[in-house]
Image (tube, rainbow, N blue to C red; front, side, top):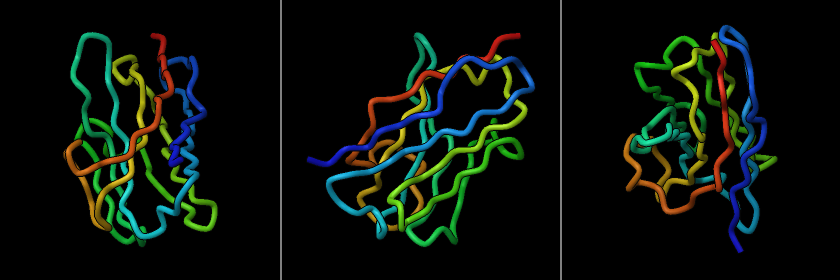
Length: 124
């Protein structure tokens, strides 16, 4: 059974940092692009960041550029999202996703594997 399990969420004050991890099991994602999305209460799921299979290609949503960093450790079958200078508007459930292909994926329909999500709450 393929699973993506996120961890590292929590409650943090504005300006603080969190590091999310997404550990994959059941198959390797070493040759797949990976992504992070988030969904705030009452809103649709939105793209946050994506990384290619090799890590050479990365893209971010404009709202997180310069504050968030996506990375991966293929040996550990894990992808990370370092979040700095957090703002209250970053509050959401954050989802890790595995791309069908090896490249970047800015749209949710590029992904066929999803984690269960981890809550990030940023207080003002």
